[in-house]
Image (tube, rainbow, N blue to C red; front, side, top):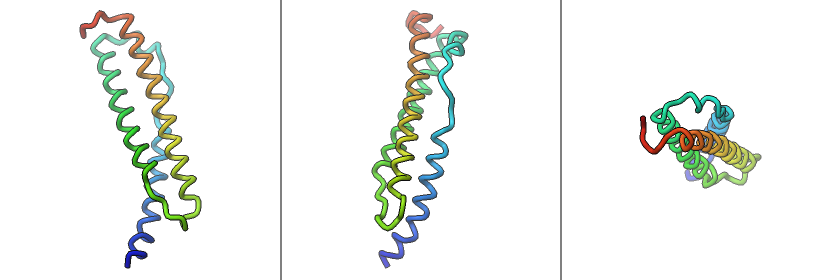
Length: 114
């Protein structure tokens, strides 16, 4: 009975990992010019939003990295690694966006939110 429950969950696990991996490519490069036109309150919001996105992506990456893939599932560990790598790349992009917003905020704002 235990074999049946783990056998049934493996395809679901693989499908979930592929869906999460596909979502990891959403988003673009940081455009510093778009931050120049923002007010201090908007910059604060952008920094907070990117911090939240980084945290959520890191949680997802941790869940994927800690997922136990059965040995008999061919390619399962490669999929797991690929998904974790995509999430890491997404975190790097989000950090670049956050760094760009922080740099503009430091230059434009005096510590208050307009």
